[in-house]
Length: 283
Image: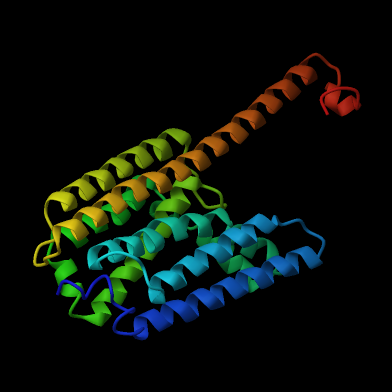
């Protein structure tokens, strides 16, 4: 029981779930890079840093599936949790995959379907930040504070299912908080910032409870349990600080756009061209 969670895939060898994760991450990364290449060959601009972010995020998913992680079983499991559920989703979302797909697809059925899906009412509900936080952090409370974590060590299919949920919920949470891609409803700074703070507090509280008590039905050495809990606590803080930086940057850009619009309206009201428009000032 003790070693079955953290060393799954390393000591026992990759199972079907791990191989599916590796192949899936590789295919998605190749699709992203080919779409970015198509965009650039067409003459459009697309930052190479987004390629780097997406490739690194996909590599993180692969490493979490088959790569060795340091520490005892619980510490290794928690490193896997941070990679799959927090760091990789943030990197993948920063690469703006939905925007790339919409720009690279030719006008036609596939593009219309994707646009309709992004602007659909269910998608609008799903990207409501508090709901995304509930699915993400709430799912972790269910995982670690019920016997689900213990059952995961005995059932490979349950192990794969839980990690698929952790990745999907992490992607949804990072997607809604960062708000970089075009969707039906784009929530404002207050909702996203408050949700990020609340989710961070819930994540930190869960890490503290794990420091004191192992998940029900499991037993780990005290050193392993404490190291894993601290990794969850401080690693989670780092990723949440990065998410906060993305939110702050988006607020800064939005404030700049509002200021430019107000300046344009003011110059129009005065009946004269803006300095930037006249080519004299403001460049």
